[in-house]
Image (cartoon, rainbow, N blue to C red; front, side, top):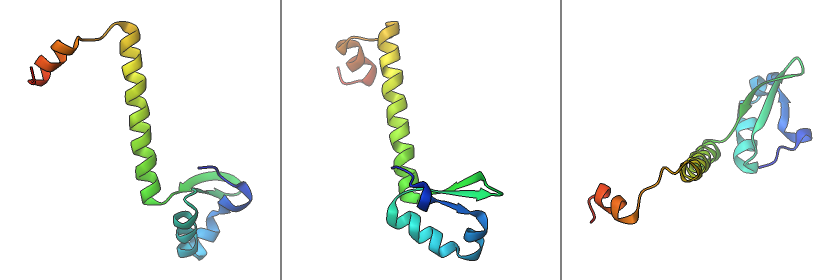
Length: 89
């Protein structure tokens, strides 16, 4: 999801004037919109489905990174131990 600055950066006043237009845009393009006030970024508007997908992807990536860190640190168990812990042995 790449931001197209010429289209995806809008003044906060545009959101105040026509919030429906901004919401339609984020839902149709699946790109977040950066809201600015006095030329500075103040908030991001993103469609709910896209936000939930991004959040789930981030959780997955963090879990993979934690798993790799555990392996590097030797925090592992054998398959037999895992089955016993899970009660499937």
